[in-house]
Image 1 (cartoon, rainbow, N blue to C red):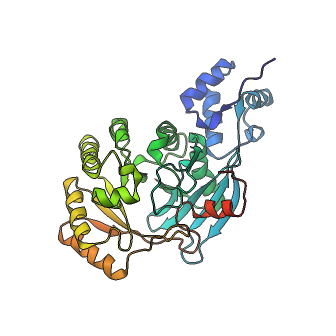
Image 2: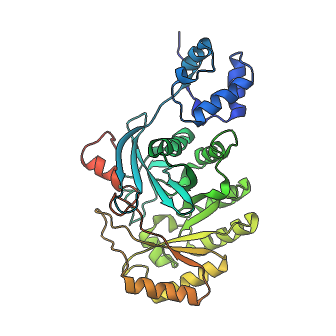
Image 3: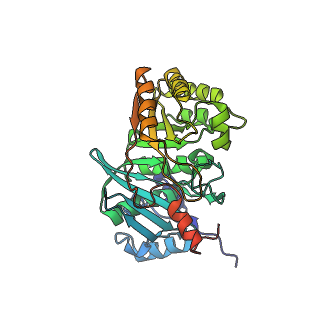
Length: 352
């Protein structure tokens, strides 16, 4: 007798769970019960105590459950930032970071194992893309980071390993799961999605009308510089990216944020500051400057304090709303991908 492959139950929304359980002869209300257990991080059907034992056995036969394992946990002695390295069911690993602010706790989640975008200053893309994360795996980053840390998560940023728009369908499913009122119920306005600029997905994202914040990793305002450090710019170009941002803003009414890592001698000149100001004003964008985290395998260094101050002054004088991201977790491999790379160099579980 041929065995059917077990389904990923954690990736199912309540209405999908209803259909699956109805096919097994179960009433609708069972789906809500199962969804609530899953949304609490329960990854063992035997712990779902308000379900009958026969139903639990049936669920085991048809559905897959897996609890990610903590391969590494680093807690910053400076600001309490927690960095996790989670082992997934196939032995691959991803990073998740929990950061505490005055307004609440933010979790930064990965959306892929590795990344194919090739940004020259990033550790996440070293070794390329291994695979996409399932919606359930992204959700578990939020759930198990909250459970392990004891910190209630109020905000989510998809800025970890991977390019979210390169894993579009699974990321959209994750957003529906984490936003669901019967689940974690984290509002879309508390979620930020970061992209290196896969503009072919912008209109599709806008059509979802999710009211999240779209953060565009710009990192250079001109094609010559951006193409050198961000291969995703090839065939797209900054002008087309800005037009796509304008369409997104017009359709959603949600202001875009430009992420800009300050790299010494690469993208921090006064001329680039003036061009960045022009780009930001064109789409009413907020600019978030990021002091570069040095990556061992990369040659780039962060901008000097003097260059950073001069850059900020040019932006502010041009009327651009600009902030500088706090450097949280600087003592715990803060840059995305560093912890995973450390594990790989030591010959850890992942085979990427």
